[in-house]
Length: 160
Image 1 (spheres, rainbow, N blue to C red):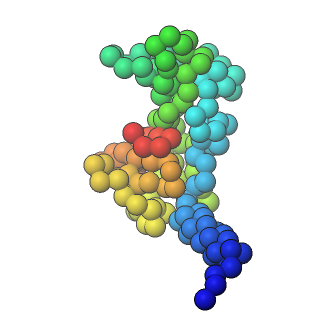
Image 2 (cartoon, one colour):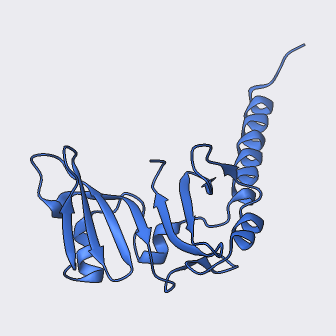
Image 3 (cartoon, rainbow, N blue to C red):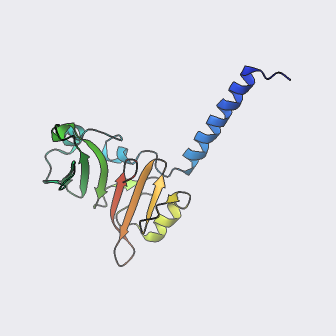
């Protein structure tokens, strides 16, 4: 029996489409960084254009990471030893303000643990974190106060 190349091509195409649909149907937010006006791996120079001069800049000891703080938000920027901060790229965002909301359910600082669990029930859990999920390629962690309300969200480009 002879298998035609076009049949193989169609089967591969159908498999790829099925895979993409299955992944996208599990996503709660397609691009978390868009909420901040950024794209993944966006250069810090763009952050500065959007947010202006930061309140504080702190280099993380013995690493090539720099924490750049604005009101209610902090960007983690990875730099090359020989490159200036403006050429570094954003690897994570820490959110402390309720001004930033994500997805249809508007999850953010102030949301309850129950709301988070419902929204992210289809996502893979991050094992080493009390409340963290992998949403597509983005890793997101939630931190709560004593009333089980979100006080901090950490969003990583592709995991910590």
